Image (cartoon, rainbow, N blue to C red; front, side):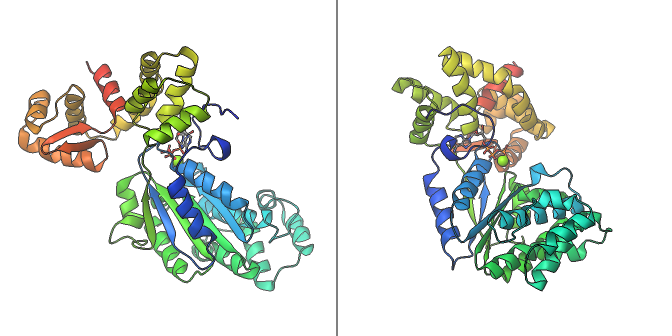
Length: 378
Ligand SMILES: Nc1ncnc2c1ncn2[C@@H]1O[C@H](COP(=O)(O)OP(=O)(O)OP(=O)(O)O)[C@@H](O)[C@H]1O
Ligand SMILES: [Mg+2]
């Protein structure tokens, strides 16, 4: 069936490619003896959430596996209480859906119900005393006063306890995990999580993030709590084959040279393909579609990207969008001395905005961002 273009994360029939990465994730998750987790990283809009959603979708069909997904972007706020409430809720709901906790009402409903309703629901099911107590603790969590230290410990152990008692494997997916650093005592909480996870036998965690700096702090850097605990996986743009497969799946039949042109322009970034593909399917005009993208969505998306740069980095990027590639050229184009250009280039490379193509030659990593900059500041 032909898929409809969308700007939202995709899974199931709308999900294209990523066979290798998904295969590896699914293999580890389905191996009862493995507790190797992963850390997905990659630039904004490259398809991280979609991979996690597809992973969740595939796992949800399997027996003996319980999977829960939480995105830090979906939290109403970044208070500890909201985070713990949501984390415990998605974990309990995942086990409920698999029949491990045979409650009639959803966890979300029960968490917001008065005590009598919770009592009555709990009286109808059989769980071990220990699990019953955990369940009650979290169902009443929102009504409880504010000391959450104990709750952090219990929430991070909740999935493991349930998984052990049911003899299943538990997969916890935490999308945009570094946002946890914005929660009060965030880094402390991550450290606690890591220590507890070391003793987990049935739990596997998969996290994602788009900002290199914050990912270094929680998972990838040598001083981070999850260092060497999670296998890093970089999410790259689609290959040419995946791009062609994408266009086919979404019903966009184009001659080979147009596919090549789209691939060159979008560099295989799924978000660009979704947006530009949609316009091309209507107008059949690639150049017009790119223009439209840059002036509409681009203005939102790229302005945001541009604001992440310091003022000087912005000046450098603009000079590069106009065609300067070497430190000397960039210095001429920007009016900054060559010596400082080099250090700005290093910073821009760290942010993933600039890439080195050969010795002393640099370009903006994203050609559409480059077009947008050129148009906006010409
Ligand atoms: N495998 C895929 N097949 C088809 N479309 C995809 C795929 N992966 C991503 N997309 C499309 O690309 C866009 C971005 O996807 P997604 O939200 O998964 O990326 P992300 O890296 O999580 O982005 P963000 O940085 O905003 O969190 C969406 O429009 C989505 O539909
Ligand atoms: Mg995402």
